[in-house]
Image 1 (cartoon, rainbow, N blue to C red):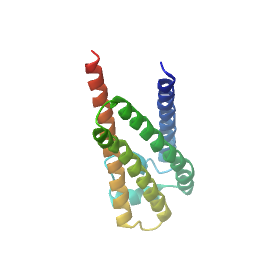
Image 2: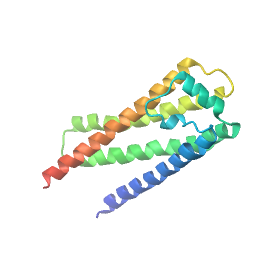
Image 3: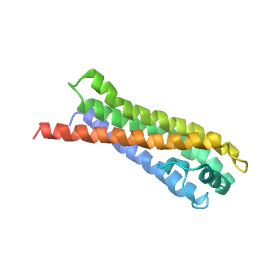
Image 4: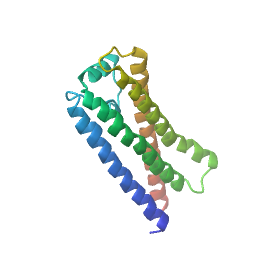
Length: 172
């Protein structure tokens, strides 16, 4: 195994570790601070204005601080790591392919990162409305960002898997 391959698999392992930390902080700890309601980050099919408002009403003061200071910090690192893993994987599997096709296929992981960072900013804004009426436009945009993030991630993973299958078939 080359040094590049070892570094890549080290990046994959570190990304998985950070994802575990995100799952623990946002999926378990934060859920306990919000009356059992799931955080915005894991609602892959989005959420209504009422669901967003309910989450904010249920979130404790400590939960808000935890979301802003722990979860959001981890969720700043994770999309960058996952985008790097997906981008490197797709780029490597596309070696020798068309530069234009490579750029098109790399758009999916980059879109994932963009939507995740957009979602993070919108969630930070929503957390400012604890105990107040949340603007519908804000919850709607945040829900769109969440759904878009998961759609782009799904597309990136499918592209990577399809390229892996093609590579495997070429080497059989």
